[in-house]
Structures are given as C-alpha cells and as structure tokens.
Length: 352
Image (cartoon, rainbow, N blue to C red; front, side, top):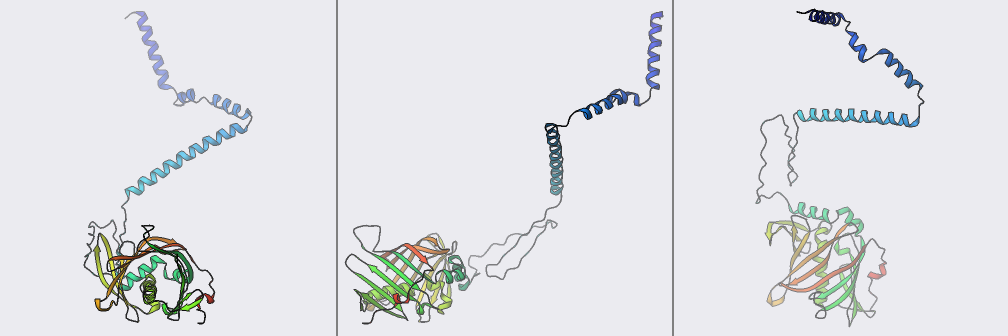
C-alpha cells in the first residue's frame, strides 16, 4: 500500500467515526433548520393581511374539509355495505284478510312467492263496486261535486262519424241530485233541425214541454230517457243510496280484456250487468234488457269511451248505445260543469 492510499483510508475511517458519533437530531436540523423556520415565521408575520390572501386561505381550508368529509362518507358507505342487509316483504290479501309477514337477512331460507289461483274468488261484488267508486270519485267527492250540474253535448243516430247521413241533435242536461235516484231532478233540453223540446223528470214522473206547452212524451222517447236514468253509470256508483243489490258473476276475459262482471238489481227488480276493467276499474260497458213484445226481450248494450277527469271526477265523454248488436245512437259530451246553482223552476212543468 502506498502512502497516498494509507492517507485516504485514514480519512475515510475518520469521517465514518464522525457520522457514527453524530447526534440523531443533526440530520433533522439540516432539513428543518430552526433559524430558517423562525425567519419564515417572522416574514409571514410581517406580510400584510389582505382579502385575497384570506380568501385563498379559506378556499384551501374548505378544500381540505371537503376532502376529509368525502373520505369519511366513503368509509361509512363501505362499512354499511359490509354489514348484513335486512329486507321486508309484505303480502296483502285482496279480500282484506291477509297477514303481514317480515323476512330478514339473518335467515338462510328465502320464502317462495305463492302463485295465485286465477279461479279463486278473492273479492266480493261490494269490493269491486267500492273500488270502482273510489276510482271515479271517491264517494265523498262524488257527493259533493256532482250534487248538481249541467252537461252539454250532441246526440247522433246511429253514429257521429258519418256526417250528413245521421240524425243529429244538440242537448243540454241539468240535474239536481236527491237522496236517491227517485228523488233526482233532471231537465233535458234537445234541439233538432226541425223541433225543440224538453223532458223534465221529478218525483218519479216524466213530462215534456214543447213550445211552452206540456205534452206526454212518446213511449220510445220516454223509454230512452228512463233507461238512461235507470241503467247508467250512476246506477252502480249510487247503489247504496238506491238500496240496490249486487252480486259478483265472476272474472272473465273478453277480447284480451280482464273483466269483473257484476249484476245489480234495484228495488224495482230491474237488472243491469256491468263489465268493469280489472286493470283500471273503469266501467267499460253495461247490459240490460227491455220488453220487446211478442218478439221477446230486446238486449241493449251501453259502452263508455274517452274517459277524462272533470273537476276531479271520472267522466266518459263518449257513449254508444247498441240494440240487439246494432248501434242505435252515439252521445258525445262537449262540456260538463258541476256545482252550479240551478233554480227549482227549471224542473217544474207549466200547468196544462
């Protein structure tokens, strides 16, 4: 080894002993020099406080706060997902006699959904009727809103779709409801190209007025008016007030429609059969029969279309009447207003 190498080796050993014996805080002081920190603090204290500096500080503070909150929320979400979940299943019987059951995630077995038997009778006629009334009103709203009103429209025979080839008339119908249908007051004013007349119903009797004079309506005219009053939507919607009896014929499908079929018999033993959509609970059509002489009873079908809301109640704006399968007339409502004041003189026929 040369003298030069020996000197170099001694220098390395000396520096190693210095590092070994050095205080642990020596390196820290080199990075965080107290004097430099003190100078930085004095410098920051000497700087003027401006709105821009404070705004920058607040923005940095809010950024840190949002970052911290985001991390906290994310951690809480992970914690909630790692816990066992709880689910509830409720089973409701349409007949109102079902029980409520609850299933939690603690149980390993999952209950299987029971398949409903389509032939099982789970509803009654009253339940179907009351459900339909709720959709049309409900009952309290029907009693309040439809206490009285006025309806304007047109009647076409046999249809309004073929202009120039039909007999057409405009009408105005005003009514005041009583405790039941027998105590209702109805006035129907009809205007045709060649004649105008009015039909007034009250106290269970029907009379007519033409050119200010009282007349007895023809049998077909009277039957059409009374049939509409006895075999209509309100006959079902007011079955309780009228003391009518309901029976459930069943549930059936016709032309892809799922239907409830109800029979209604009033106090006069007049029967009407209603076909109600199981999906919407709208009355789609009704059927009834009238005496037809030697040829036997005549079957009528009244169909309802174009349902709309009028002052919160459901109204079909189009009605079609069929006689033994052939369309007899079509009625279209133009305007309907409920809750208007009507003078009693409108429902009194002048003295003959």
